[in-house]
Length: 354
Image (cartoon, rainbow, N blue to C red):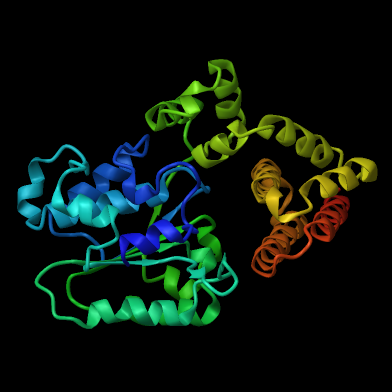
């Protein structure tokens, strides 16, 4: 993909205005996972496919790109034994090519930009996988790497097409599949991958990541940054969202409405829905959906002792809401009915679990 195209089209796998994971050269946290990947590569025992799982925004894609960059910069695994981590100088030719997406041995599967609608496609399509597959048909003397960001965006046909590649991997191929909810990955695909689960970051690690990003994030008052890190539930992306204009205030409002469930504060919910109406409010809508996802995950983790069957309705509501949100984005639909329906469904799910 040409640099001009990258600049013209927004990237679905990037949190604006932070740098894309392929352009992020420092990894905060996850040292044990990084060491395991480095040792496996140096020993010549690197599996051909990984699912890198964990909460959204904790560094999964950053780790995937970090590994890809290191392998291409260190084609001899034996020579990599002296390395302390997967870091590569940004000035290295492999790093520059990856940053520009001009490295011919790396394919990226993500939701692509639709020039007709001027929005991202709602899914990773089977044609996207087929296009990436061409890279693996070429003869190669070294690794060819496919990064999928993320597995949740694969439609059924695309997932099956990717499965065929992973089932019969060409020599010297590596698949790095980012998954925010690994349990929902196609079971047959999941069974053919090594699972690497990353933990949420600590608030101190999130603060370190924000510090590494520099301006405009570091211009924000330190107390506000601390508050965002504490409420981000281990996710740098969530913290950055909270640091955006009115982010903490909006998160507090959504949290109050959610904690009241199964009681519905319709006045507050209608006010929230009106606030999110319109195309210009996409960032706020994303923040609300992130807050809801974090709240649901917290309920699922804290109440597992009550039985999975009683909590299943919450997970089902989220899957329905995520699909509706994706459709609303692609079709440019009014977000108000989605918000009203989401809270009504959540209230019903909470009532069933009571």
